[in-house]
Length: 351
Image 1 (cartoon, rainbow, N blue to C red):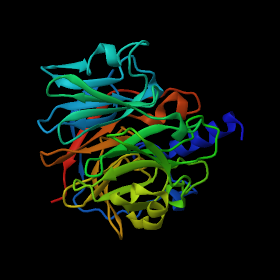
Image 2: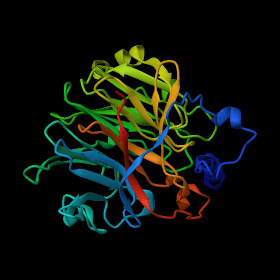
Image 3: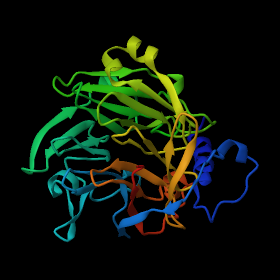
Image 4: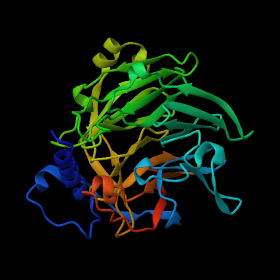
């Protein structure tokens, strides 16, 4: 398929993700409609708003420090920010790492904090992790992502840290060139030795459930590091697999199971009680996925689109980003129609 044709298909996919007041009825409602069970639906609380800083994913440390990555699709000058540090927003960890064409980090989407408050930056441009100590403000280490586990169209975005088994697991969606057939896979890296494996490539659980859609994208792990949850961006099914199963491909594939129902989603998180949260990119929501249903928890502000990353904090809230990704030129037939502000939002965890 030629690139121009696929871009057109992808653009039509992303056009489904308008804000609720923009959406019109479609002949394809049976495809994109979500079985929503809603009670006392509220609007999320906005905790950060900017015309210039456009958060893609986010991470919070145990003491509440908030970090965001900037999606490479918008060609940001600074790739990572700490928000509202001492009353201002600053490049993080510093300009040398994240600002300008000559910065060490090239294209960061994935960002997470571990139990020691080390910040992990997944640099899909330089194909490495940068691990930074946010307490002492110093580099802990870098971990290279070997070329042997990367495909030409790899798109290294969301990931999880499994501290129990000493590994990070990347959800490689592929299709980064907008013309290849999806070849999604888990990229599993040992955080001690640096050894890496590409696992479960093109497993049915990773594939989009609509033609022209995107594959494996959201991924999460429970705080006890027992279960890994995941799904396709354009998929309505949530899957999970024991975290211990990533020792071998055979064990991994044999233990994948359907978990429940979800929306088309770009972000996913699990809280200490096993509640699985997703961003609903079609209806503009944060929702809850269970074995039997998808439930709306909170709507994003009217006029906004594309709730993206999620992060469970220790203050009783789940945080998220809203970045209008579907309105970027790359995913909107070459037309840049984004209009700030871009947001970090939060809503209460399920009690």
